[in-house]
Image 1 (cartoon, rainbow, N blue to C red):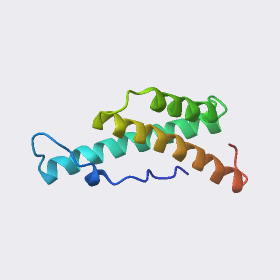
Image 2 (cartoon, rainbow, N blue to C red):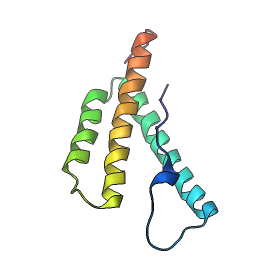
Image 3 (spheres, rainbow, N blue to C red):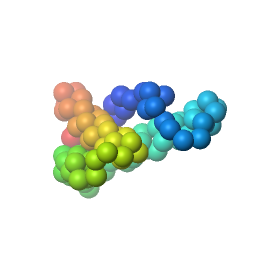
Image 4 (cartoon, rainbow, N blue to C red):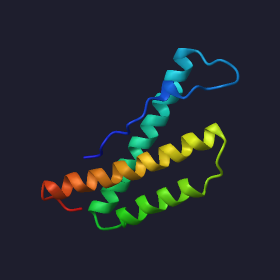
Length: 102
């Protein structure tokens, strides 16, 4: 029950050498796949009682806040970490609403 990340990879206004759509789609798909895998692992460990999910989400938010500002790639990293944290929290809320272990 992991909530998908809410992001639109193509609206990032990437600079530098142009990336072909197929290359971009490949990279975006791989990143999305990794993010979903991390969320599934985190949720599984949390449900098994082996990890403190709220703490992990807070740690991700803390890392995002401490990243230096002003660099587009770090802004994207901040957004991603915050989206991961929110997705993990949302999955927990969904499980709790369904009466499943958090």
